[in-house]
Image (cartoon, rainbow, N blue to C red; front, side, top):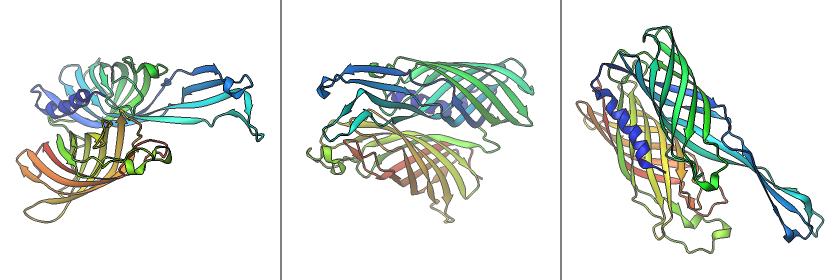
Length: 395
């Protein structure tokens, strides 16, 4: 997992409003699906004399991964034919596995085994393409063809061994309806080589995506008439991370140890003031999960999507926040952290012109991990975080 690639994306978002050129910045979304499969079909056969009847065991793996893709985007449109688009795309990559026994194995009790149960592995990913776009017609054209090219980053891959960077190119049409821009795009990505043990994963990826945003007249980022804020979040975990007291029976004989806590948490944030009382906030938080007496480390990215309510109290500016959280993991070390949870927090915020500082105590209840893994993550997670964001002062 590469930390620097995701932080590059975060700093691009923070610095875009201050580039210094004549530009208009819009925030919108992207939805779509992948066209190509993510894995080559693979079949490996080995003799299994242990069964005593000449059985051959065949391990089959194939792609099961034409799934929905979605995420936010930010686009900087210049007066010339060029623009810059950055996406944060959530995507699941799936593969199916099955073991075939030929001829079938017959056990002493009369039971016959011809194949294993078909299983599906799910890898949660976030992809961050950073694209330079060239428009063939003036910006205000109702239909405008364009080309796009740039690097893509994939900082977390749930232990799949997939590569962390690639190059992306695409072509599409931008349709302008009033101030709404709709841009269907065919996009190709060539990923770098990944882990050798996962050589069945395809490096060539084709997607059909539709981007949408509202035309902005401001050099400050604008999302459908609302000016958002960008910044960073830092903090520490208050509760433990990995728990040996929740081992499955197969691993119960291992030595148990206290759970680690106090690990650093950091990342980027995006916030939109919907009114004086309500706001919407999204974080991208890097966090390592550790056992206190061992070298096992699990790398995670957490993505909480939070609705904030500012309490009507003068002076201290308290707020409540709540919403779903998503988690992508890598370097699993015998664990499989759950991917979904629900967060709630209590904090205060203070504004100094364009700067806002917001310490918060946040609780997340994660789904329980699969029962077949060695280490378990603690489902109840408490964090102390401080957000620093920049934007137009709230009226």
